[in-house]
Amino acid sequence: MGKRLTVAYALWAAGGPLGLHHIYLGRDSHALLWMLTFGGFGIGWAREFIRIPAYVNEANQETAGVKIRRQRDAAAPPPIGLTRLAGQVCVGIYFGTVSLIGLSSMSFFYLIVLPLSVGAGVCLVADVGQQTSDIQKTMTACLITSPIFYGSTLSPLPISLVASVTAAQHRRFKSPRPARSAHGLGPRLYKLGMAWLAFSAPLGYCIFHNTTATVYYISDCLAELLNFFWFFPWLRGLVEYMLLIPYRILCAITGGGYTEEAWKKVLEILLREYTEREIDALHVLSLKADASVEEIAHTYRELAKTWHPDHNPSKEAEAMFIKIHDAYEVLRRHKPNRFK
Image (tube, rainbow, N blue to C red; front, side, top):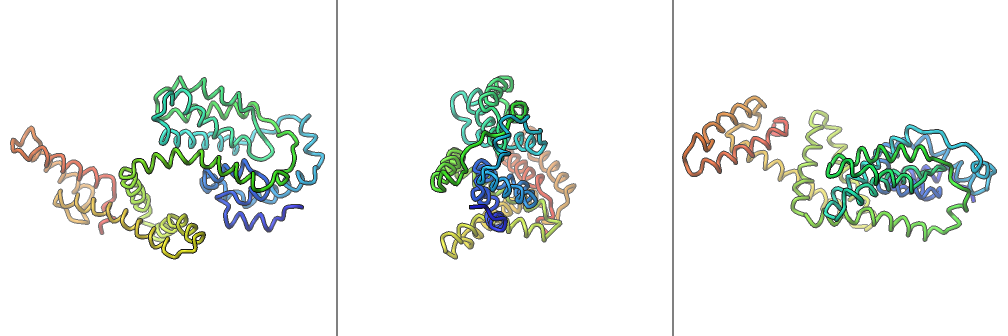
């Protein structure tokens, strides 16, 4: 049975960042990529609005067994796509960063785990659609490159670049195979679920194993993100709305109305705690809420001179100096406009 364009667009709109339309069209590699990157970081999902008709046409050709698929075995390699190449580099870096967060404590991490993680991201993008690449050669390139940048947190970038170039050099069309629908939806979803779990489990363990540090990190990130849009209130509201989307989805699935309110409360607690830190910092430096950047810097320098242990022999001087320095660091990272 042929795939319908209207159904593909409906799934794209309802669950595009989760790859629902790709699952419907039998593009499992593309679906997994979207599941792990939330729709290609949102950019790929938006771009697909004009690509879906071509995807539907390819799916229907595979179902009908068109001769084009047989001719590809003898055809020249597919042309190099700059979008695919850029996607390989970005996803390779993304996979490497995730491994740095969740797997860096493993033995031989920089020699084996990190390059294989980067290579997996590159190969996943290379396998999207009608094209694929030589996985063995791509992984070998990663393993050869990794010792050169051993121990560097920036190593995912050069490893991903080398792996992407290698994958592009060995690109080819996929061999003819039965339509995805012939394998059954259940087994396909099971494989996708296992792949998603393998990707997210180490990261989830790392996050929940360090719950306290993670909460403070998330609160800092959320506050920094919302503070970035302080001069566009409507854009700030949109960002807040996007932050609530995961819990709106969970609320719709569970049928409970409490979930969104719970997440709003968590969001408010996180942002309020950060605001309280800033207010405490202002109190330490004896500044008003509308203090300018110059006033903050001037007050910090004066108080630092007064309480520096080298100039102040009192017992509380060192503790007070550290407190003043920490307060300045909190305020230095954020605009005073937040306190108006």
